[in-house]
Amino acid sequence: MKVPMVDMLAGYPPIKDEIETAVKAVFNKANFILGEEVVKFEKEFAAHVGAKHAVGVANGTDALRLAIIAAGIKPGDEVITSPFTFIATTETISQCGAIPVFADIDPVSYNLDPKSVEKKITKKTRAIIPVHLYGMPCDMDAFMAIAKKHGLKVIEDTAQAFTGKYKFTGGDWKSLGAIGDCGTFSFFPAKNLGAFGDGGMVTTNDDKICEELKALRNHGSKVRYIHEMEGFNSRLDTVQAAVLGVRLKHVEKWTEMRNAVAAKYAEALKGVCVTPVVPANTRHSFNYYTIRFDTKAKRDNAQKHLTELGIANQIYYPIALHLQKAYAHLGGKKGDLPNCDHVQDTVFSLPMYPELSDAQIKTVTDAVKESLKVAVK
Ligand SMILES: *Cc1c(COP(=O)(O)O)cnc(C)c1O
Image (cartoon, rainbow, N blue to C red):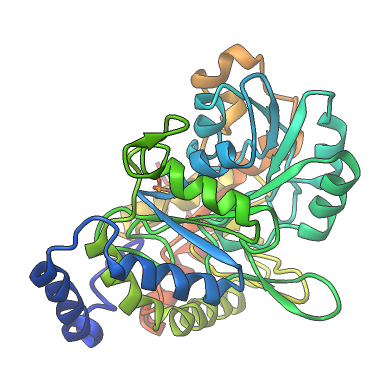
């Protein structure tokens, strides 16, 4: 049985009519740029994560870019983040003229390690960008405490973790992305809440940052043709907002389904490999389901075996950012961040989407088990 990494059409038939009605309404009004569907979706999204504001932007990368600028990061400033993430997290730092500084990851969660972050703080440090990798909540209490102590901004890269939750203080649930100064989200089709194209969002509780973001996404102008600064053309498309407004109503159920798939994977793979260790009082959003072996040889063998059987799989991420050519000028080398070195060599991700069937799960987990018994050429 072939198993794809994601099946973006699986969730479509039940909501097809609703989406087509919403999209046709935009076509009929032709309010393509910052139409009322965008404003409505921003309000609903802000309410969903429990943030005061949500500002729709063109994609998750621009969400980071605009959040970094709106948070006051300037050329020459240092921003500490994870080396074990998608390059969007760091190219946006560099492209603002700031300097990405890589700290090591935690060997269990694979997320940025607060203790390593503290060691990287210098006089130039202005912000921390924790990335909720695969949907796994970061240790936000620790990051917020470090930020408070050193006067830093916190931007949560929540691209993979919409609907993830964290218990912040006093037993109140907090959505990931609503804890730091800004949360950035992506609606790339394969994320938990996917558009029919590109889209992104920044959430914040800060009125001033919100005002900045709204200007930045629209050529720096708060009043039409009056520019106090330069900005970007980075608005969330109205057609996408209409699609997202419909899909938002279903996303909690889809995350529950992802968690149910994850529980079945964990049960079947007990004692076979390391499965995700979700911290108490948090909710993982399971954008990806990532397993780990004790050696690179076992990982590579499992990957080859699954591929041979037609089971999709992917290493997120095979080369950590500090070891990429794009960051050679920063001088990173193997051994600098030992947890990251080990994790990049031993993890890989299995198919994950809400509608994954029990038969598919069994096919995948049987193949992982088999891979430990056969040597694949
Ligand atoms: C997907 C992703 C982004 C970028 O989002 P786009 O919408 O594709 O621009 C940023 N950070 C992380 C961690 C991501 O996974």
